[in-house]
Image 1 (cartoon, rainbow, N blue to C red):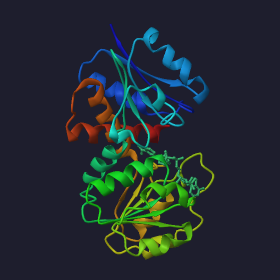
Image 2 (image 1 turned 180 degrees about the horizontal axis):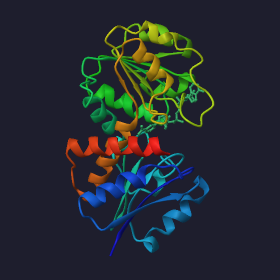
Image 3 (image 1 turned 45 degrees about the vertical axis):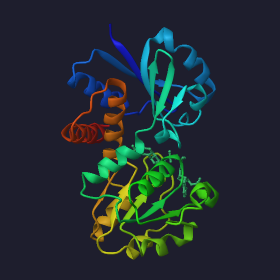
Length: 276
Ligand code: NAP
């Protein structure tokens, strides 16, 4: 019998998760199907009730359910402290994980970059940014600057000696001491009206600074385009998306895919996005 997996969230129609997992299950000859289910927050409880009748083995969780899922878990992994993206359905209940931060870190390493010894500037401090900030501090970042519209969202990092929390207008100043700039806001994303109102902060970056955008649609945001024009290397969020999927697949199946598979999934997603 086919094992059933899915991704839940709202909106969900454009999710690339079915592409990622269908490919991974096929590669490893696992008889499984993977679907996308639209589940608004108000319907999460009834989705949970129907897990046995759907014979679900696991599911991925995206906006707006990443923290709403928490009360239904019997186990929440420390990596999921800022939100859950992967749930394994086991005999005794639901186990929640997050593979986002590790997925980003692996994707960074494929570009020859690590947090170790780096001065990192995060733009944004939402769920994704907070997971990455924590991970950057755990993995040797020398200093982290958090630049966000709403300063209070960074409160949990306020006591960290290696962290500065800065208002939006200080972005340029933060970029002066930066090895790795990470956009963790939806600015520049397809379907989002707003983009950065100006990009002059990029001119403050030191010569070898690397620019990462968590946005992957479009694949080359204006931020990345302008950073490249100024001579900076960069990457979009597709590698993170591919690797968080590969790592979630490992939670489901115990199979750790090699780096080549992560890279092939990333290339596959780039082609799919171009054709949409
Ligand atoms: P979130 O929790 O809603 O946080 C959004 C962040 O962006 C907040 O810091 C928010 O600031 C800021 N922001 C939103 N609109 C803004 C605006 N107009 N001007 C300035 N700041 C603005 O979202 P999230 O889950 O962290 O996701 C953030 C981004 O990462 C999204 O684009 C998402 O698609 C992307 N992402 C990508 C991957 C991947 O696999 N590549 C994975 C996860 C997330 P305030 O705190 O002031 O509201």
